[in-house]
Image (tube, rainbow over all chains, first blue to last red; front, side, top):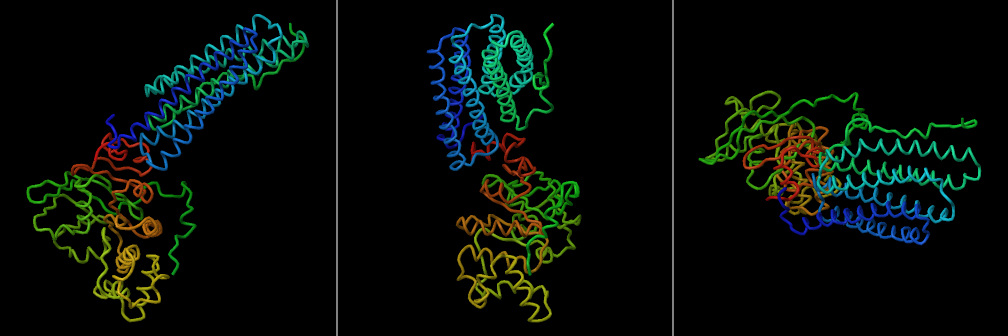
Length: 238
Length: 272
């Protein structure tokens, strides 16, 4: 790609990407830390995680302001226009990822005194790993302007959905076994749902990368595997 | 006369709208030479009727040259030679039997600098209809002058001083006077060669608003150096570079997702 005649424009566009990668790095970190604070029953760590979401929010606001200014001052067109709009959208998605991770950390504080059923954390750990890897991959695809890689992430969200389904069923089972589990399990259910939502935001970023690089959104329906909205368990567990 | 487009026509649903707009101007392998200089190379393009087509490209790319082929203004340049076929409504406009004066009555032109005649506002607009014998009476001529000034959104500003000199108007008003003068002879096509480059943003907005209204009745082709203007006013955009027509497409595609790298580099400011 040849450079803009106006060098400051070139620098501004590069500056947007730098901020996205900074935001993305923070969001990734937050997802991991939120789960670790949950698994390690560490309320202090959870509090620190909640607090660090503020940095992501700040970066989001800064990016929004920069994009608005650039639209006003530069009137970007073609690939520049697509980049500027994509930055705005990706920043919004990352801000949501930060919020969801923060929510996991808040729940980690709430349930830090409880003993977790052992097998449950394995599923949540798996979801966290998958969500973090997906997020990292999509941010790499963004930085490398690689739509194929983004589409791979887009298709792989199904794996995260599959683990979510099994965690969902498992949690329901625990709740049915002993009503005293309901408080803890409800928190864990929201944790799982948050991780599943992080996956969805990641696929939105993947779609935006496709738009930014190709000028069109991916064709067809994204493979979706979250069946929990239509799942109902009743009666005693056999 | 109210020239606002019929809302019923404007609100045609996509299902009712014709899938392809009829072609008004068709160019096939047009080559233009100024002496030994090959200014335009193998340009082929179809320009749809009743819409605005924008020609963009760096200075010297051939866009104005091509515009001037469409009303044979290049005939007046001694060293200029035009080859290839240009048709309006399927008729060759370089046919030796065709009178260029009659052609220019069908293809009006508005220039970069407003160039009203040093005559009254009334006479500026009445000039064309008079020489082409378009009116039989003074009353009819008055009618043409009024409706042309109305279509050019100038009537309200000048109706009380029609006998004042056209050159005494502001730049934006002068340009609208020139547009009124152009549409007074009821052309089918209006060529605009950077019509707003000498105007302030408000006068520019008036001209753009006018183009939006006129395009329902006329085929408009505009050469502009302002990408934003091309994006705002046109439905189709053609990008010229070094005498070649690089890319033609719907304006929304050209400005969000152009096919050719040269188009992208030009509209994003990567080369001059």
